[in-house]
Image 1 (tube, rainbow, N blue to C red):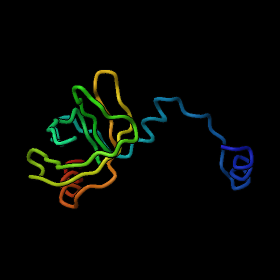
Image 2 (cartoon, rainbow, N blue to C red):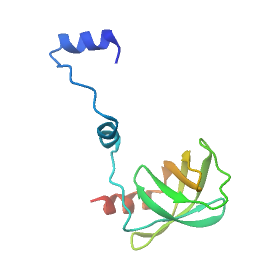
Image 3 (cartoon, rainbow, N blue to C red):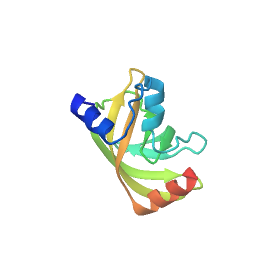
Length: 122
């Protein structure tokens, strides 16, 4: 936050609070609950993978012999056990770990998938 923004905020009656710690900031940024109990099946480059966890914002999955890099766009079928039979997704790879695990952010979900996943978030 710039000095000018702070001054404008103070003039509007806002108080200046200490900047939250990294862990607090991470919790505040997460908008959707992360689920691990019901795993999704996502297809990446034509191969089927089970998610480690997922939310309406994206998913985390291990892809052996991974060739993906951050900012790669991936898409394909999406299946959810007990949630819905099938749908489509498009996502952007956000990070890649040395063990082949990736984090991806959804760009687009089929309407059926979004509704079923939203119901599971409750």
